[in-house]
Length: 420
Image 1 (tube, rainbow, N blue to C red):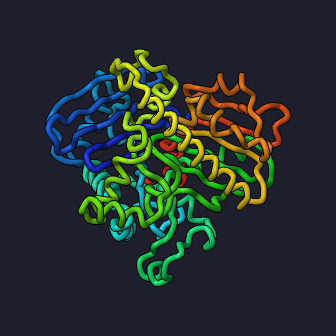
Image 2 (image 1 turned 120 degrees about the horizontal axis):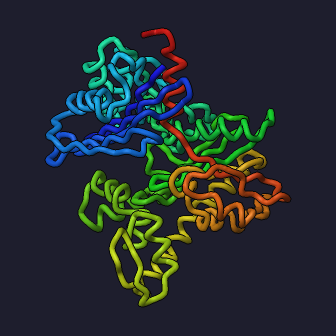
Image 3 (image 1 turned 90 degrees about the vertical axis):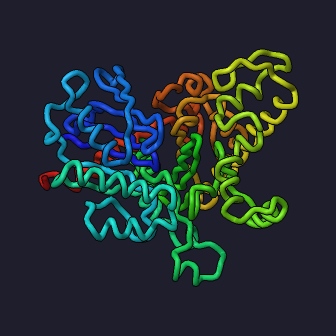
């Protein structure tokens, strides 16, 4: 059975075609700048999707983007299937399912109406997700579509974890609460680490660390708390997101700058975090490189050669300190909330690939029983999976590459097998 996985953004459409017989990616790609000048599709195919071809043409909307994707998938030169009808089902990443969805579901009119109802909770992503769904329905009539929600995994949180200390009427009337995100990634990792531990009971903290970062506390494979909130803005320091701030900061900055709340929140979402503190970059690789440079040294930042300045070095050092400290606090808090810690897992771009930053996060957690094997930690990068804790560490520490697309495909297969 072949599953097409779609992740639609407001002006983009990412896809993977997965053969579920062996869970192998047959092809993948990205359509960018939909409805904007310079729209294009980059298609990857062949062994380990190592071959690539770029198509540059006008793409007015998501329907045209989906039509182009299907044309490329059956193309005689770069395609991987002979006919579109080989695609048995489509799985869609949907950002916000609110309280309506605790698991993935086959998409019908009621499902689409519920996704639309959640637009106030996910104003940037949910409309794009709907466009991707409707584009697939037009391009492949009769093929079942499945919605896999970013928020679903976290719906097992108890009230004490998801309720905010605001008047209860906002929860009753508007469902204002902590939802959490990156749920498909957290669910995939939770399943993998439970298999590795082989224990009936486990207490795990999952650190999904990338440009967007979130942590989850997982007991026996189920989420009991997570760092992101009503939106992905809450939690640890991120690439351009501030993470946790006193809500009064919004009022203070808005009054100082003469901004409305929306503009102030845009600043907290897009111009804060690593970028706001370092004033160098939103990319942790750049910030870390700068923080470890010597004044006057030539370094590469964002593909450009620059001369490191002491003032920026100091800012980047402080930024890295703030980043690792914010993560460390959550790990400690979740260990306390769960009443112990059996395993700590690093995943996503930073978590999978940066031994230096993993070591920084773990430094000082020895009181919890966390002890790294330095050699094993240094070896685990570029998507390598494995254990990085020392033999005498009371808490096992792992690097496990995430695979959200495969998790979406597995849900889609489970729900649609035999339904086409």
